[in-house]
Image (cartoon, rainbow, N blue to C red; front, side, top):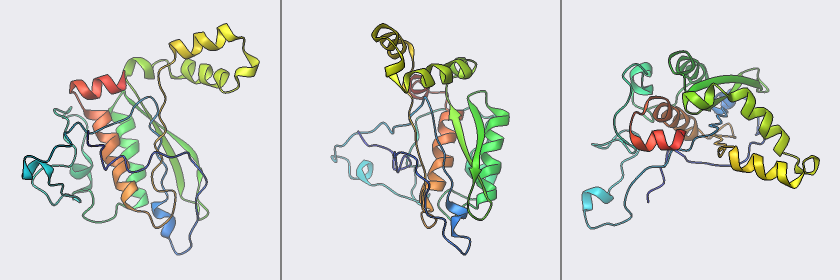
Length: 205
């Protein structure tokens, strides 16, 4: 299976380098909770065209294409006016696009988590099925209970583990000069917010 290059980094969140000179405009952290996008594909190379991967929107096919999408959710390319990777997406554009996803999709909720050294907003997005999003406060409470199992009995811990969905944290570009992860965050969020294919539905559920 080809793991999407869009999901460039799956790492714990740490407070990254706050580089001077505006570099931290790319220091955007996005967390996708309860969902993980993987690219479905084969590792075989029998077909030369199928084994050729084109980055930065220069190939004939997108790097990740899982199927149909909701036309009511604007793609990053449509909203930005240029393909992802053609040029760096600015911090303000990233924030605006994620706020747009929040407003048009019942799968997405965006939250502010602080600011960079230079005062730029840091956000994270929670993305899941509409049914799970409707229970987000309850899920958060259960996860908080589970973070210290010493305060729970064994039966309580087992019950929480059985009923809670998997939570996945995706962190993008923790250093100011890492720009590709920022673009990747928009692509992954769009696929999870707009995808109507069975793979996306399975991941969200």
